[in-house]
Image (cartoon, rainbow, N blue to C red; front, side):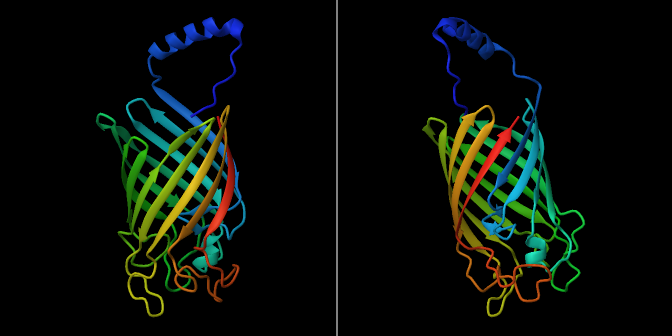
Length: 267
């Protein structure tokens, strides 16, 4: 959703004619876009990834008119040291790909796989964790403004031992408010099997998350957003860093309520 450029009255007819021609032009075979941005703190499914500190992020996306797509995303992180008691693992590089198409009129689907990679991470050197690298398959469906998506991990999820088959359910909607503004409410449900903490056996890592994001599109590829988010996770339990964390802020709750702001430029 981009803000329309102001059109001088003297060129209105020429622009209108060009638009009519463009609408009948064939869709390009391929597209490749890039983006860079900064966010006041990076959250993944509402869990802290940078200890409440800013993150610099970048990505690229390739799409074919058939519906096939590939992409990559990179950011700095601290959570592997904060939570998994590792001494290395400062970056995240995600690689994803899939296929989008129309199932029936007005209903589209999205099938794909994503890998979360943390180069050089040594999560797992401490008993109770495994390597942080993670793979998920996903399937999504969109009708109108509403999108539902389901993710399932293959192998351990983000370094949690015996967590194969972790699941995430995502439900969101995007409402066009006009003037380049959009509002996106979201709710999600994360389950990570076989995780225990103190008196909670088996499902200590499960939680719900929710957020509300207001986005402003300034045109020419520049967008800014503000997000308020929270979780149902209980403080002082699974998502609390411990005094044995090697390089982190100790006793920090990673799943607390927060607000964040970000800006992104796409080109």
